[in-house]
View 1 (cartoon, rainbow, N blue to C red):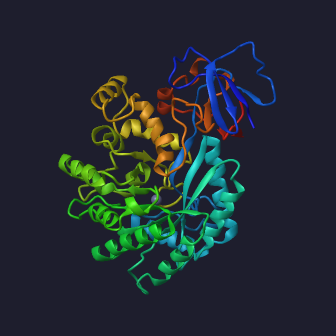
View 2 (view 1 turned 120 degrees about the horizontal axis):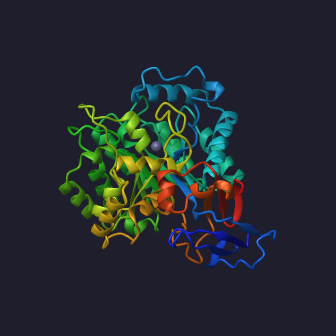
View 3 (view 1 turned 90 degrees about the vertical axis):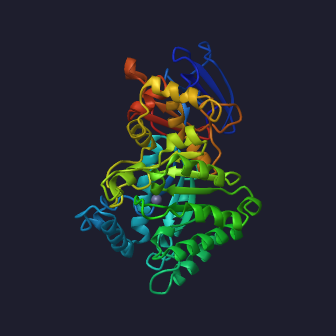
Length: 449
Ligand SMILES: [Zn+2]
């Protein structure tokens, strides 16, 4: 356990100044100007070597059980032929029928390990629960949660990817298994996928049922919502918010949160729709999580236009709380990309056209009253760090590195990087590089100086 990290650059100070961070019991005690006379070589001191230190990263939304299906030899016969959503569902369904504890642990462990190397210290991991996999994915997820507890906070979401009210037995088996999963104390989140139901009334029933189950067991709720890009098809978000109000989430949930992932259909919203959404969300602890790499690969309108939740605009223009996340790694839903949340932040520079300093300043000034006073790119970094942690109800460390916050950090580059080393969060968002060191609750968990 570290007591000090010395000689580091920090986000909200000029890159020419160096700082020392004192840590006690895994929390920040103070951040002071670097004292060069202090002993940087003590066993409980990490010499930062002029590197930039920032809050550690988070996967607000990642599928632990279906990662690396395209890489694991066990599933090598399942490769992408068409690259569409139907094939991804079928291929994943076939793979799921072969899931066993050994491959679930092997693939999941790889994903968590690679994520920690990239600077991740918290994640919401989705594990599927249905008649095909029964509780195998959940049990493997819980084993990994325990195995990594000293290095990463793994929040388990028991998740019904298949329908709860459609199909052969009208979802009865999935509901039974989900009810069982909900009774596990170590399961923090319950989730479902209303868009897989075969009619609108059943999609609503799906939301009602999972909301009720979450309230009954006092779990966070996470819905994969409106994952389509067709203006003729109405989004389910309005009914979902109605259900949440009707079931008195605010009064009954004991500060548990509601996270809405994907929401690709909202891309087609006009100003008045956003304003209405802002009004209807008011008072509910709703967080949005955009999953741009999956959207880009899987979603397009009938006119072949791509779309993904405009996360930056939602934060700045409408004051929503939103994050961005990786979603899938190495499967037919998202075959490209890696476990690095910063690769999504970097993609965001292009996606949201948020790259120049001028744009950042303009956006900053325009939204001064509704968002924390930080430049745009800092906010973007925060969409994969502290805002992402907030989106899943985890305690987070802010860019200001405030005393009493958790000592959860990532350091960039290494001592030998010279002038090319990242000196600011903006540089990190442009190109984070691959050398990192991760610290979780004051404990170095990956990487070397
Ligand atoms: Zn997902």
